[in-house]
Image (cartoon, rainbow over all chains, first blue to last red; front, side):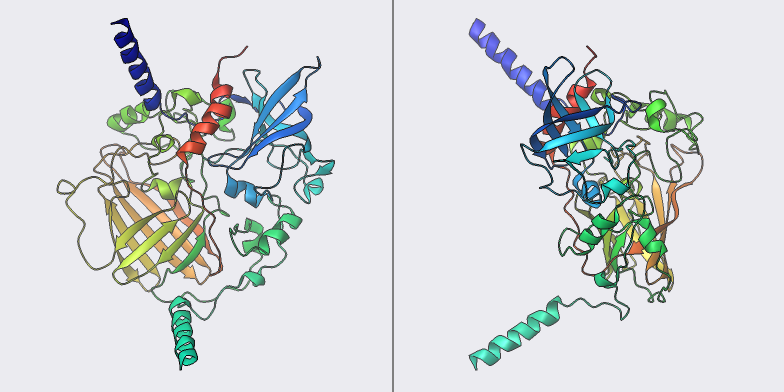
Length: 142
Length: 321
């Protein structure tokens, strides 16, 4: 009997999980746009996807502990317009990122600045970025 | 003989695929060296060389185009760029953004209504009540991501007129017999505007649709006007969660200013939710893109969106340490 009850509970939990809506991804409410830390690390994964492109990299914090950062950009068309491609980053690349904003909750989650603020394997990215400069917030478009 | 047949077939196929375009075609190679603050010169040069997945040029490029050809008569055909003039409107349509004057959403989210936004909408009591049921992720009423209920997040298409008020990037207009068809890069959706003289349906006789029912006509040689009814009231008007009732009627004016330019005005008429008509777009400029412009694929992907929500948005929305 208890097994049946358990199965029903699992079924309802499963149904509930399936019905939970995708979280809105537009907002900046979770991010603090006044903070622009610069973090240096090694790329572990680069995801070129809708609704948002994002980059994962590992970096050591001030205590020497490895932090698994995730930094989001806008969507592929917006990033294309900024000179990014699906092949811009690869695991093992060394990056130095000046964030456009970071998560308010203290998690190692950030957003790219609109332009500038990216050093990829020792060079400004994308091409010509050395002449751009500011690190204003990238506002995700959808 | 076989060679002759093959040659004939190739010629026929070539004729079939050559688009009927006006004489003043826009060639991609005509693009000058364009640059402004939104794109580096180097990136612009690389993008201009692309044959596939083209990206529209930035606004300063269009500003540099001094010579404009005359508008063709009764013709909207072409690939059009809304990106350069601000067609991507995260906070609501350009004429009525849900932000406070001089402030970005980041320091003004969480308000219960839209009091004091830069250009308020004339909500009725019913409209205000409907507005409050919609929980957007942006604008002065933005809620934390986990609490938003934007239908687009659940995989619904943006519908009409949100397709014009939210992500109007690149669109293609084609004019087969009796229709104008709008192909939209965002979510790869389309809508039909019938031009065969049929009247609009009685909305009580038809089922609601995401993109409603549209009819249009040329009011002069360079102005095409369309009306739409029957839009499902589950859709939002914009990214800021503005509602509409099923009684809404939308009027569009597509004015072909010259060969390279369309001005688009979109008026919402919904007495149930708004005490007066209002323009979401008012002479919004669309720029003609080259005929060989290959639109990028920009489709909301539920699988990728779920991954994103789990990896980024969901983690960022969790309570602080």
